[in-house]
Picture 1 (cartoon, one colour):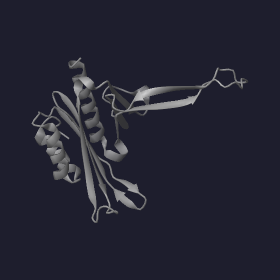
Picture 2: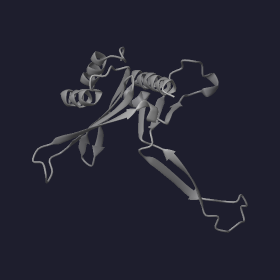
Picture 3: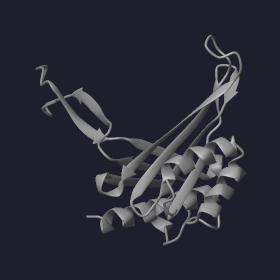
Length: 193
């Protein structure tokens, strides 16, 4: 995506994703509330649910003061809806509430890595304190013959939003787009501290 910092560019990226573009754009306009768009990333993720193809889109928008996180999901008809339907949600997070921006990337041949070498995939995790994940495992003392119960050890991690893109599944352009967005978000969180 050539233009990553304007409303027009955002609208074009939503159109290119081809996933209910008017619905997705309308959802975002409500949360943007007239604020400028500094950077964005649009990620369309189709997946199989039993024997059906289901689609989901996530849109991250960075404004001068907030991070807007939007999701749209589609569902088949069910007991409460006679026809297929979609749900949308947005969360507007003030930038001073963003507590962590974690960017993980996978590269091949790390010994030959040079600045600018494309990543195979990128995972962006953003935390702002709304949700946390706890990972527990049995604690040990290091003695391979010890049979005592040492309780558990674990880590509590902020995990409000995670997005993964890969060269194989999404294309190298989408990987670059996510890195560009991550850089802009990281810079924005520095400036509000």
